[in-house]
Image (tube, rainbow, N blue to C red; front, side, top):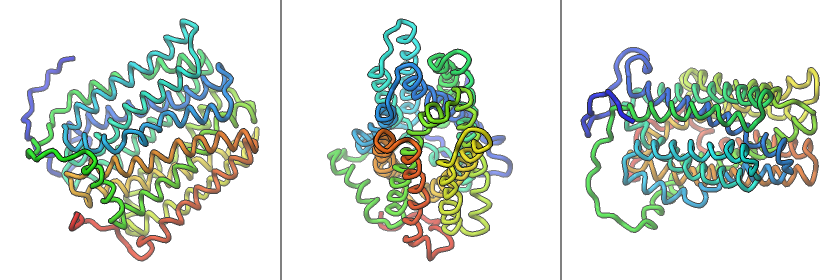
Length: 431
């Protein structure tokens, strides 16, 4: 692929903050934002399509659907820590490009196998696992790249725009995936995300900014550099609090999400298009969460605002198990809305805090170490949800999983957030 952009300087600094909207005045961020939005749209289509294929075409059980959900996140436990060290050693943008291209090719094998009549659950599991590996590299590199692209004064706006657009793209992707699945079958919906992955690759390639050359330093043992990231989490009360909360929340969130498609299709008898529409509507809270995060943080303070957002809104998750055909379908939408609004708003505040508080040279290791615990909890939640669904029934399992979502926020309430108005805004000393 070629580009007409002039060759950039290898040591171009992040564009300084200037008046005006970030999307209008910052070309490279606009490309990153467009590519990431397209990527999230395709990922949402895939996230709905894979369990629908397993449930409707391969007659998967609750545990098997849980395994499918777990496979995509298991690589965080297997390779997340060394990837953090590698990302700190290498430029992030090429890693992002290679990861996106790999995912595109892997997902394309599913409709091909279905067309040849050889698609199996094992194939879906392998694709989920392999794309999960690519996702570890992409997410770690992306987290380290953003603060190198944006000036500190722009990072809060950048995080809010990226989280908001990701939520909007996810909603559109879920709705489109459900509609395509109903009209042409769930396998065909995977073809729709090919264009979005191509657009993501094209936008990322056209970014002119290059990360500054990193000072040559003696390469130490991988084990020691991994240990630095883990000690960073263990020593600092803020990082430790957020990772414990994130891991606990993800067990509960993924547990209920792994049951949701099964519950809506088999318990309530809904069609694929209706499933996609309901899940998309429930996810609209993410847009609202991204929009309100900065105003709430400005009014209440970043620490107090995070407590309010993560405690109050996700409590609506308790409405989800009450869902039934007819008017009570609205309970799913309302419950999902509260969960997604609270989680996304909290993530906006947390991302901005971590980018300001963590030294840039350690961002890759921090991202990987925290992600290993946060995302490593996801396969646990997926398997737990699937197992409980098979053993107790879908609705009782939903009750257990959704009740745990607001309870997880008690970790924040027991932390120093309770006594502070704002999170620290200066880089941590002694890290």
